Amino acid sequence: MEKYWIYGLGAALIMGCVISLLASSHPDGLERVAIDILGGEEEMEESTAGEDIIESPMPDYVIPGIENEALAASLSGLIGVLLMFILAVGIGKVLKK
Image 1 (cartoon, rainbow, N blue to C red):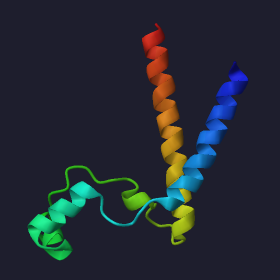
Image 2: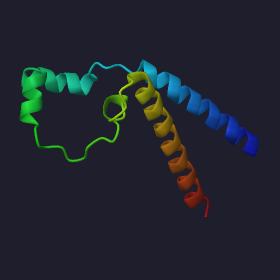
Image 3: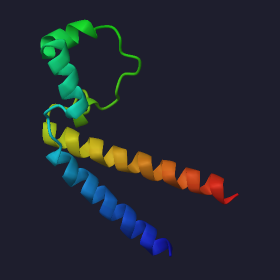
């Protein structure tokens, strides 16, 4: 049974590294509506300046400080998969008790 965990995690890590390279740099639907309502990206940035409640650790699938965008996107996918795996295992252990 433990072998399946390793295979599954390995497959998820590979997919996270590869699929994160395919992430769109264009805004999603909700972000697009906000841009349209506020009149453009510049206006949106001005109207929301200083209002960040939580700053994203990996905004737009990149890691600040890493110049190579492909490497940064792959690392963000890898980190995201690992964090979700740890969270899922932790929740599973709590619920099992």
